[in-house]
Image 1 (cartoon, one colour):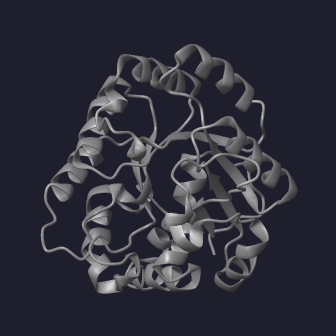
Image 2 (cartoon, one colour; image 1 turned 135 degrees about the vertical axis):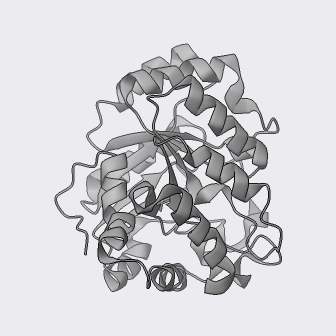
Image 3 (cartoon, one colour; image 1 turned 135 degrees about the horizontal axis):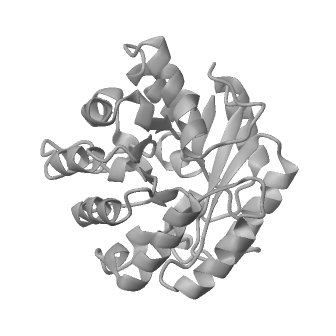
Amino acid sequence: MIDSHQHVWNLERAEYAWLGPEAGRLYRTFDMHEVLPDFEAVGVTGTVLVQSADNDDDTEHMFEVARQNSLVVGVVGYVPLHEPDRAADRLAELQRERKFCGVRNLIHDRTDPHWLLRPDVDATLGLLEQAGVPFDVVGVLPEHLRAVVAISERHPQLTIVLDHLNKPPIGSDDWQPWASLLAEVAENPRVYGKVSGLYSAVGQPGDWTVETVRPAFEHAFDVFGAGRLMYGGDWPVSLIAGGYARVWRGIRDLLADVDDNDRAAILAGTARSFYRLDDTKATDD
């Protein structure tokens, strides 16, 4: 099984603009060794580290962790999308790293919800498209989904994955416009979704239940299919939603009625093909 969405961060190695005392239990350094017992318990045999800060220090820290842990099969790093020249140089550096598998920016922390549509950002997305580098989109607003529709049309060969399915309104009775926009995004066969971070959007993150998450998962399954969905545990953010084991049990229960081939795709196959993971340890079990 491959976990397509995991973080590590080190407060002494990088600056995390979003991470302060108000983040509560997340406001500390998190290392790989802390999640390994959970991985072993649920059967994770490969994991993808995903950037947590828009700077090079965070990305370099992830690569150091990856070199020390064979369980890490991929790293989604940072390049400054809004600085095409510097992004091109940095992208060339990252492509020399064996486990480099994608790029992400924290667009949900940007005050401009249309930031992805800026000409300078668009130019760098063209570089990713040309280089065949996948792009993680961590959106939370309807405008972010609309932006994905636009950039996927402008860059038809760019492969994109929606982290956390663009945060559906779990716990709410109003699934629009998220549901219709997700369906529109999914019309492009090069756009994928991560079944990750599906916590309650009302009240506290840990207020979710399998039944409150089920409508979001079933809609994503309908519009993407298993071949474009991948599991992500979202550790350590998952700690505020009940912990890794609880989140995994929720995903497992959602997959109970999915056939074996589709389950294998969501739990490993999709991540392996999307990120083109060169792994020998991760399996479909």
